[in-house]
Image 1 (cartoon, rainbow, N blue to C red):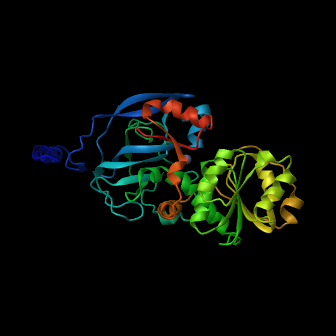
Image 2 (cartoon, rainbow, N blue to C red):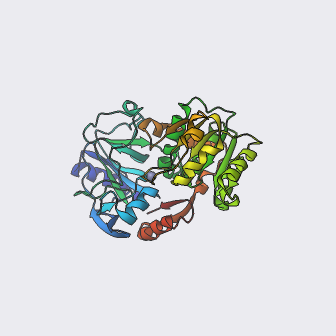
Image 3 (tube, rainbow, N blue to C red):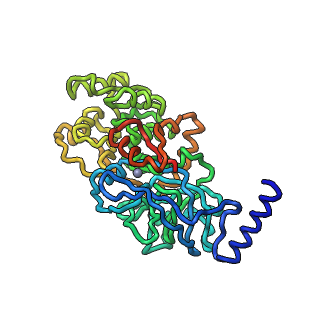
Length: 396
Ligand SMILES: [Zn+2]
């Protein structure tokens, strides 16, 4: 910074202090009067609109968006509007930098100090109970809570991360994740889904360091599942998918063997291939990460007597699956758990997972295969619908 720039920054700070007084603004960083946001105005159509950036209240935060992942949920809303949210600013896997912060906001939801320039993510919003803490919700998942990026439109409009700026309101959970790089921060929300699933799996008391674990489905969720297992010290992981490229990715994430289901004529042959991958043993535990009812029915055949299953593939209704309760559950005494989204507590665990994954050399950043500018958000969502690549990110 030159002497001239420094004086200008000081003057701006003083002027901001005279005008507002309630909030701190980032020194030197001029905040524009308006922000772009991608508004889904009809099915399969985003329009980029400009909205005024509002005054920030004492309990609010203004974030300059740095990036946001595209989620399967966004793709569903984009294509069919099942949540009836149109017009809506989507984007819930976002992260950015605090450029303005209300005077009452001193700490994040985990108790860590929060200030200008910190990098943050949001999780859930509790408008009716702003004093709730993350530890109150240790046992309850996010179902039913509001999240930015899936909120009804209001007069502020800056409600989702597919935008240049976002306003974090009172009652939101917000986390200081300044210690994580941008790619890791974009992966926090989907990774939390796997932290939760593994926590659910652990309740069966079957998952061990030396367990043989099958992971079916190698989209971003299945691949992150493998990375979480690998990071917690599980060494023997077989990935099952129908796409060779995804199976190659599974190895990068820590899978020790892969099985392409397309190479096997029927379910028995496929189950046998999984058994072979473990040196002649069925899996002790399996994670089902696809939204396919057939895949759900198949996975019981991969699991040994007395083994366990975590089903997490059906975030939304994918239809009924046909299983044989005698052979698949009773006679094998399979312990099954379901997993859906995550708890607030899982979010904090996720930050540590991402750090550890880096430390043991898992190239998580390679999961982000496409990056689009905000102006190209329609193309980004179409790319997701075509299932090209893995995780797609919007970088405004
Ligand atoms: Zn998501």
